[in-house]
Image 1 (cartoon, rainbow, N blue to C red):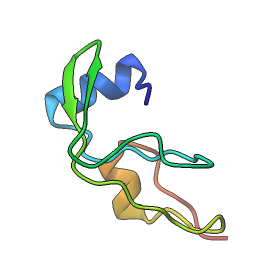
Image 2 (image 1 turned 180 degrees about the vertical axis):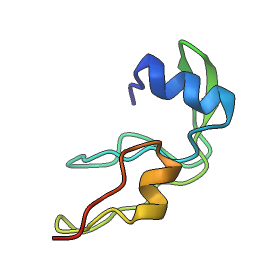
Image 3 (image 1 turned 90 degrees about the horizontal axis):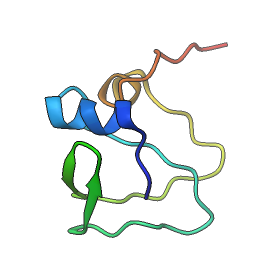
Image 4 (image 1 turned 90 degrees about the vertical axis):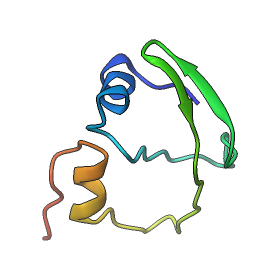
Length: 71
């Protein structure tokens, strides 16, 4: 799993506690570790969601993403 610098540094600062990815199959495993530019990240959990899943506002905040809009 690749993390860009902003995400890795946000995790290191405690500002990012959730990373969202769209994969055909999971590429990370719970309990795994990933070396990043900002240090080593521990993967606590991996959850699969349906293709039509909508990110909640709470998840967007945890991932340091713009809030989702409901249309």
